[in-house]
Image (cartoon, rainbow, N blue to C red; front, top):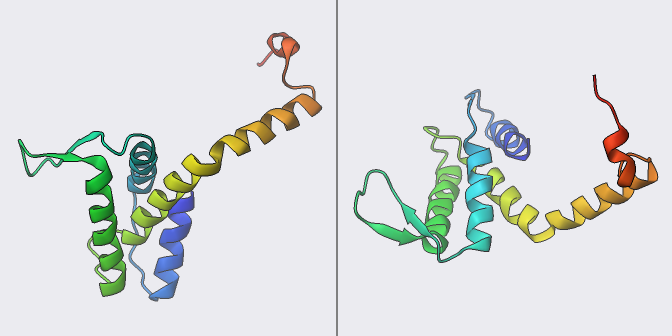
Length: 123
């Protein structure tokens, strides 16, 4: 949703009507989160077989290419969506566990979590 919001914002900013469909923003969020946890992890590009990269080096280069695509108004890929997804992945990695802690407190206050959670019956 965050990457879609970034895509729509970018489209509004450039008065464009290009639509995009797919999960590339979500994929970028996962890649960015992986990069935060394992910056030395392995990465490969399908069009460069046999060449290995560290994901911590490759992802900033690819994000830079997307940023250049935003600045140059390239419209082949949805660069706004990629950057929005990557930003979400990085921010979620930094502060996402706080959101889960709050969720647990709310569920406990509502009586929907705890030892009796197995007593809930779903249709």
